[in-house]
Amino acid sequence: MNILIVDDSKEFRNAFKFMLMEHFSDRYDEIYEAENGEECLKIIKNYSVDIIFMDKQMPVMDGIKATKIIVDQYRNIKVIALSFHSELDDIKAMLEAGARNYIIKEEITPDIIANCLNFIW
Figure 1 (cartoon, one colour):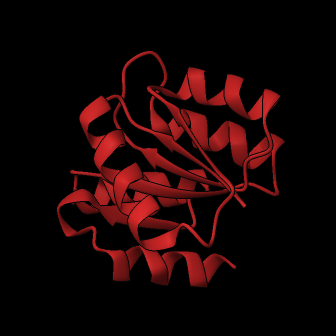
Figure 2: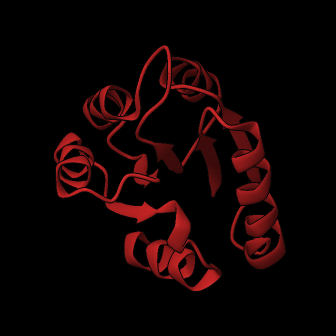
């Protein structure tokens, strides 16, 4: 499986990628990165991606709009939302856009990621 991390924070992408490499190296082949929804769409046109960890709030194109497009055009790709926003309206917006799950960034642990991966596979 190939993973795409979409987040406007390079520091977050690096930390999240490190966690995936440290705990899940046997479950993926490639990890790609994008800093916004528009860049994400370009990557999935050119590379095979199975799971996208998508930030909700980003410049250029946010995670809600990108998730709607992905769910509509790439039904085989699973989107898991990531955000610092824990308000019900934010969670609801991403889930209604088609995200399979919503993880609050402050609560990310290897166990939570493992449960998400097990749930969608």
